[in-house]
Each structure stands twice: as C-alpha cells, then as structure tokens.
Length: 119
Image (cartoon, rainbow, N blue to C red; front, side, top):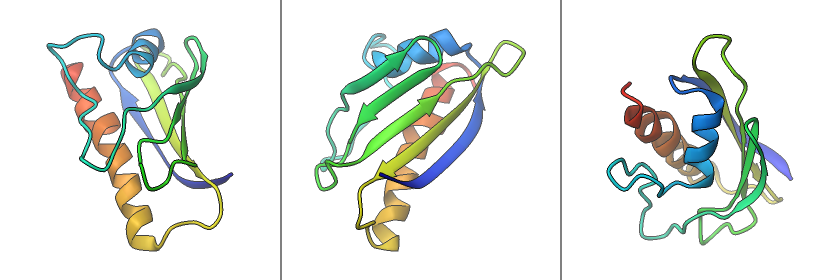
C-alpha cells in the first residue's frame, strides 16, 4: 500500500473521545459528522488500539482497496493531534480523483468531526 495523502490537525477533544467517535461514528445521533456521498459507504473498523490508533476500510465504492489510518497522539494539553493517512494499492488514481478522495477525508474529519466538539 502506498501513502496517497495525509493531513494532521489538532482536535479539541482528548484521544479517547476521538477514538470513540471514529470507532462508533453514529454513537451520538444529535451530532452526526460522518456524512457520506451517494458513491460512498460506511467504513468498517479494521484495527483499533485504544486510544491511539484506528484503521478504517475504504469509504469509496470505486476504490475498495483503500484504507484510512488515524493516529491519535495527545497534544500535551487536552486535545488530540489527529493525523489521517490515506493508503492505496497501485495504481494510484488520476490526480483529480486523488484530490477528491483527500478532500472527502478532510471534510468529515477536520471539519464535521471537529465542529461537533465546538470548533
């Protein structure tokens, strides 16, 4: 698997809370954050090491080989320096599709999830 993209951003919640949100994205129906498009599917948790690591299966029907790794180190304060990494088998998709995939990961993780914690 090749690293096809990665982004690190601070989340205001501690690692154990982010871990729970990633492993149970529908746990709080009053705060939905994993909003999928028509050509996407709910990921399965492939690996979970509480509270530091979560690996998802692909959210894309067209690229079922993809996996998403989430590293959840503490930021030394009360938050998490969450990093997602998109891993794909060769051949990598065209640049436009790859850009779309990266954007689609960034939206739910670094916008929607983050906003559920008040930022």
